[in-house]
Length: 53
Image (cartoon, rainbow, N blue to C red):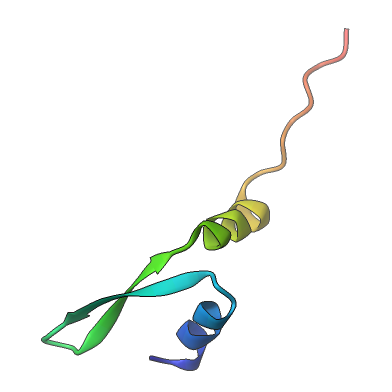
C-alpha cells in the first residue's frame, strides 16, 4: 500500500475488501459512502437553477 492509498483509508474514503491479486500481491479497495459524497462534492457540476418566469 502506498501513502496515498493509506491516507484515503485513514480518512474513511476507501476500505480494504480483503481480496488480493496473486500475480501482483496488490490489495483491492472499495469506495465508501463518504468517499462517494466527497467525489460528488468535488467533481459533480453545480446544479443549475431553473429559469425564472
